[in-house]
Image 1: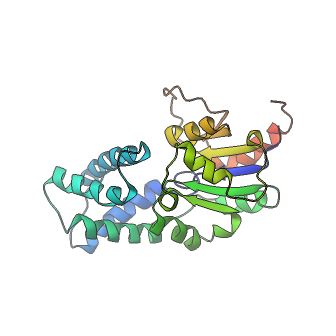
Image 2: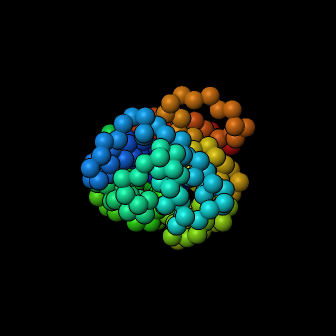
Length: 236
């Protein structure tokens, strides 16, 4: 099996979104003169996950997502340091500056770039994703960057993957294209539905009880080159 195209999810695959989100949340509270406790962030994470799930299922728009998660959060805690709209805008600005890629990721991409086409496939928001990649010095590694907020479809929607698959000139066959991501229900399920090979980045060593079966699984993104090398010896 010869992989020719790598489609990378961004957040919690190449970029440490978990830490950036926490730092940005804390910073935004500080910007409005308040302190964000761990309990407040834990509450926000639950609400944010629910709102993003609704977005990925097509139940709300990206525009609504931006504000709804903070509307729901402020309603839950009974306190609002500013309007949900203002908090959302400042949070996203902070997210750009608080983001960092995982150690070794740029070196890995540097080694892969001469040998593979590479793309970013992300469900992030347009005012954040491209500026973050630019800030981290990662944009130039990719032949295409597909942001759900820019195209109107989100993973796992097959229409998202249709656009992604046509984002480079002369794309290789689907069986020679590998989706790499941490989210089984968006990255992996979407790739499977579109007929692509998939690799689940299971950094936390979670038990997969979803019924979604990736072709491959790794626990460290830096192990991806070894996986690809091993696939060249496998006939699938």
